[in-house]
Each structure stands twice: as structure tokens, then as C-alpha cells.
Image (tube, rainbow, N blue to C red; front, side, top):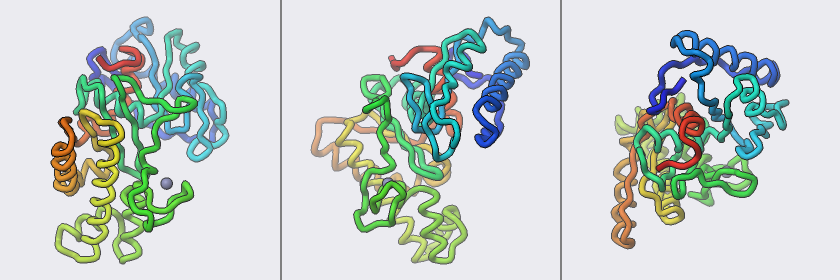
Length: 288
Ligand SMILES: [Zn+2]
């Protein structure tokens, strides 16, 4: 539950359990909304809208979900219609990465900026972009798949079909996989050992840092953004490791172009998507 200013006023967290079907998930969501209103002493009439951030692919225009990867069996399901009718308010659906960049621009580290790109590093690498204060949408309303920017043509295979995507080099999953081949437990241990001076761990971290810096360079020159925001669990803990390489790319870019570029860690952590989805319900589709 998010207030007018973008502050999270209440929160319920529960697993999606896609295998139990779309209808049951909607029942659970509707019950959660009622529960949050009640616990805050709000009446139903005070609810102005419902915003949904969902793992893509989703179609924000029609409100439908097309995600056979993590929401199998939900093909064509429409949470916008179901929740909108249930509560009698407008409902909106955004890809979760798009919702996150809207959240950071509404009430986080990119407050009121209109040219913003956000990258989210976790299991994969997600991305969203604001252009002129609006979510950038490609064909069918799709968002840019920044995780699949090529950073190393000789790099590890990516599930998308090529080698060396940002996601296949620098996601938490990719680092854990590369680390396990060298005898480390997970991505956190790779960073820990690298910080302690371990050579093979440092090589893996350096590779990830170079990959992120290379993607950052591509993003700066593609979008000319005011700010690039780095979020997700991996950046939450390890952002400082990436800062010197990012700063160097900014220095080079600013030497070449009349443009000032900023970058920062995300401020809203896991709430970014929640706040961004709420923004759609509270303020419409444009950051002002
Ligand atoms: Zn890929």
C-alpha cells in the first residue's frame, strides 16, 4: 500500500505459487489488498487504483501476461481486468523492471529525473528506461532487454542464444556458476574472496566489473540519460566494487560529449517496483 507521496505505508509478502492457477492468485491478491486497507483503517473508497509490477513478458497496453518461464499456464491472463473490476478502480500492469525505474524516478535515487535507465542485478539482469519521463516501449509495448546487451562475444553462453550477454557474465546466477567452477560456493563468496586478495576470485569479479562498465558505456551512448541507477540484491551489497570502473566511463564520456552523466545505487531496494506500479495508479504515466 503506497501513499500519495510515494511512501510505502503497508506491505504483505507472499509467494506467487503460479502452479495453483491465475484465479487463485487473484483471490489471494484481492484478499491482501482488503487486508492492507483494513489494517490501515482505510475505507475501500479511499483506494484510487491498483498498480501491478510483474515479471515479463507482459503487455502493458492490454494488461495481459505472456510469461511461460515463471508464470506457466497464465498465458493471456489479465490481472488488470480482474482487479480493476473487483475494486472498481483503474488498474495498471507494468513489467517489473519498468515499474522499478518509475519507482526510483518517483520517490528514489532519480527523483523527478525524466531521462533515466535502471539496471537490476539479481538472478538475471533486468532493465527499464524512462525517455522524456515515460517508460520507453518498443514493439508490442515491450521494454528494452538490457540484460542481453553483448559485453563479451567470447563469454559464457546465454539462454537467449548468443554468448557473452551482460546477464550471462554479471548476474548473480552467472557469478555463482563461474565461481562454483573455481571451487567457490556462491556469488557472495566470490566477492568476499576477491576482497581478501584471492587471485581467481578477483579475476571473476574483474570480468563482471568490466562487463558492467561496458554495458554502462553502451547505455550512456544509446540513451544519453541524466542518470543510470543500479539496483538488485547484487548491487545492494557490492555496488562500491563497481564504482571506480563506472566513474572512469563517465569521465571518458563527459570528455567527449557536452553531457553530464550521473549514476547511483538504487534507493528503494525491493520496494522500487511496488512504488513504481503505484505511481501509475497515483500520477499517470509521466514523471514530471
Ligand atoms: Zn542473452
